[in-house]
Image (cartoon, rainbow, N blue to C red; front, top):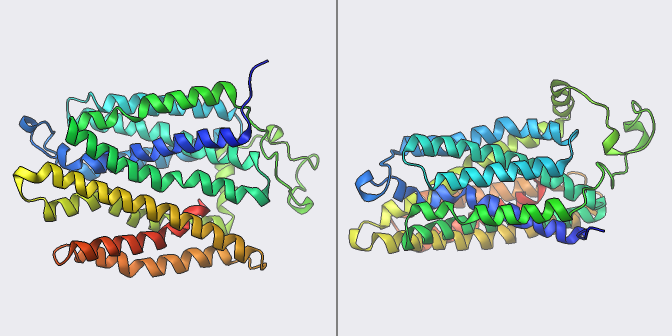
Length: 361
């Protein structure tokens, strides 16, 4: 009889893969200055505009394919989707390290978006089906702490690899580990039935043939019908628009923050390598501390106010956190020429407040 992992170990494996996922997403930000070096210096000589396209092609592929994988996740064994997606992501990331031109790097990066879209869509649903509602928030909060930790490690590892070796080695860290964890997950984790821990009120289940919540017997609907039903949920639509705005700001900070600070302060050519590595290190440390702290604070506040039967507690927590973060993020853009100390403090205070929204993803 094949060994089956307990659900806590499955969640830990999903956490580790998600950690690698976000490490990979922020790799470009950690080595952007190296990619912008001239070909004679080991880079591709890309412009800021081309660097923006490099990030946008990943996000565009991710955005377009995520609903597709969500549709498939309701109808196809999720472990298969997850395994195939991680394999595509890992191979594409490794290929990035062998790119001989900007065009090749662009193609490989778009393929990374394909792989990561499948994983990011499927993994939280597995956790939701492992844990009942009263335990789910804690399990998902743990899973999503990989977001800030992985992002921070993306800066740190990519910057260190570029400093010690060259930028190509930054793409060679995550693929072997991602494949290893996924193989363990695929062969030793048992996929829970869809909706196994849900309790659906009868009024929401009138169209079903019976009152069971067996996810494997869901009626097959076409893709456009699924989208129509989802967008009919107003809270989902508003939350999507809100997270789009959050991602716009946080993506700009994470993607260009280190490069912006490096250009402001790493002007001495003889010390540029160490200076860039130090900024990546500080950016990563602040991101990991604020991300984990903000996520956990948001989860604790959510559980506390949920017990008081306040149905609007989650959006209020997120809204207040974002409003409090805005002035500090604004200051972080204008303070670098004046004081790096105050810049780091502003980034810290802004990010710890913004990260309170992580627990709702």
